[in-house]
Image (cartoon, rainbow, N blue to C red):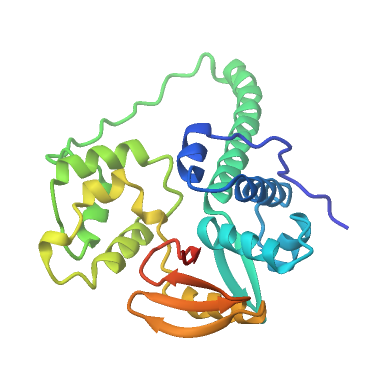
Length: 264
C-alpha cells in the first residue's frame, strides 16, 4: 500500500468569504457544510460519493439527506460516474494544489541553494557569461494576455482594464489560457443582445470562470429527489415542482445554484 502524500492537516478558512456565501443558510446547513468541507480536505480533495456525504453527516432519515443534498447542489461540483454521483469542491481543489506547489517550490529552492553554494566555489573565478537584453515590445500587454484576448469570440469592454485584472488574478486562476477563453465564450454564446454581454474585465473581477456549466444537473436532481420519495409534478415556468408528505417544493431551473426550496 502506497503512503498518502501531500496531505495537509490544517485548512485555512477565509472567514469573510465563508460568511458571505453562507449567510442565507440555517445553522444545520452551516454545520453540514463545514463537515463536508473537512471531510473533503482529509481526502486530499478527491471526489467523494453521495453515500459518503450522508455517512459523514450522520443522516438517518430523508429530512437530513435533503439538507445534505441542498448543500451539495449549491457548493459542490457534481459528476456522475458508473451510475453514482461524486462531489468535489473547486476552491478546496485550488487551495490544495496551491499548497502542493508552494511546498514543492520550497523544497526545490532548498536543493538549489545547496547546489549554488557548491557551484559558487567552483565558478568563482570564471568570467561571467553575457546575457542578451530582450527586444522591447511595442505592446503594453504580455504575450499570454495577447493570446487570451485573441481567443475571445467577442472582445467586450476595455482591454486595458481587463489586463489589469488579469495580472492580479494570474496566481489564482488554475486554468490554461485556452480554458479561460473557452469558459468565457461558452457563457456568452447564447446572448444575442450585445448590451447584456459582460465586459471581459468585469467577468474576470467577478471570477465568473468559477460558474460551472450545469445544464445537465436539473435532470439528475429530479431523479435523486424521486429516489428519496418525492413526487415530480412537472415544470411550471422557471420551476420544477415536487410534493412529499403534503408539502410542496421547487427548484429554480435558471438559478445557477439550483437550490431546493420549500414553497410557503
